[in-house]
Length: 306
Ligand code: 3PG
Image (cartoon, rainbow, N blue to C red; front, side, top):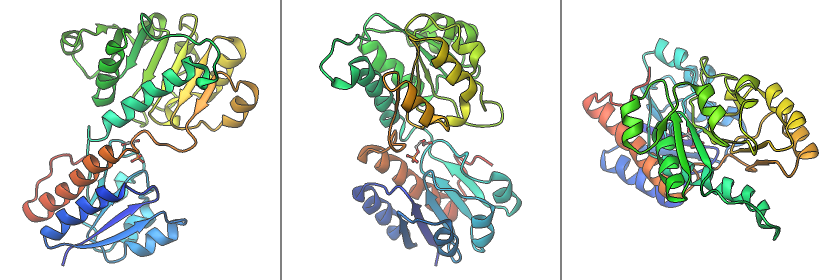
């Protein structure tokens, strides 16, 4: 019998787990649940007899992959799969998938919510600023960038985007101005949202060269991974520009310096929580379960990333 492990240090909402179980149950699959585990060893022993894993930001490293002797498919219930050792999975013929777009609305809402929180001085009663009329740049125009743009437009912001993989016409058709280069985007926009995947190409790509050209009131909003930000440049910006703010869902390694020296201009969620809504858990979790059933029963490889 096919056995599927749901491995989530950060558990899905119970309603999502119920939905996942129903899909797997209907397919005749056996289910194992490992939530809120505290050591990688627990994950390693839980994978020994499973055919598939549904996971989130959990680390699916070589050790986990090697321990899963029956593994056939790994599905990241979410977008970013930088937490999976793709090479190790591919070497063993294991299919890796993600569930793109399924949690994007939650992430976009959090990004905009954090911008409002900071513009209103964390609701401390002092006079803040508004987003209306401000220039908002989307670095990457994928699922999340598109939704952030849509919400930003509703708030009366002026939208710009740059994405080397999306055609200018598609961006302009959404009423978003196209920036010819990423530097142009940073030069134009007071607010920049980074929605890039973390990989070798994007590592530390948000650097001083880009940040330093931002107009007065520069605010960087990062709902992606900390790795895409060059932290030396980030600290330098805080030191040199009293107007610069950094808002993020993934605290940087230099978080202690920023919290201590620039508490009013830096905000990080206590725990990565962009995708942590019942809706996003349901969308991504159920999609992951369906993709596993589709792959095991019919060989469907849609959303395969390796
Ligand atoms: C993603 O890559 O989908 C998001 O970063 C969400 O991650 P999470 O499932 O760990 O909350």
